[in-house]
Length: 76
Image 1 (cartoon, rainbow, N blue to C red):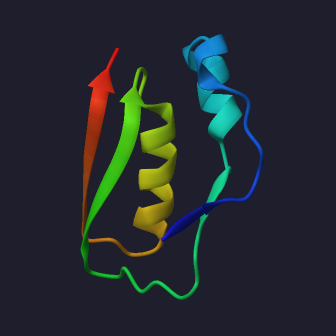
Image 2 (image 1 turned 180 degrees about the vertical axis):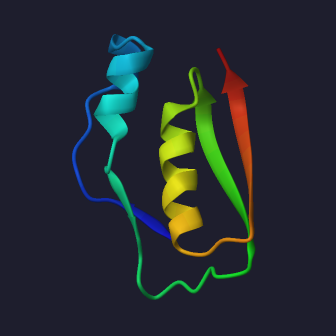
C-alpha cells in the first residue's frame, strides 16, 4: 500500500535527527489500495529508532487506516 518516492540513504549511518530527516516524505500511498477504516500490519526488518516505521505509519494514517500495528524481526 506504500511506495518509496524518494531515494533515502542507509539509516545506520545517521543519528536520530538525521534519520527523521532522511525518511521524511519518502513514502506515499499507492492509489489502487483502499485502506480506509482497515487495520494495517506494517512490517519492518530492523527497528532501531523507529523513524522509518513512524513515517510509513503517518502516510497510512493520511490514507485513512483505522489502526496500524508495527511488527519487526530485529530490534537494535
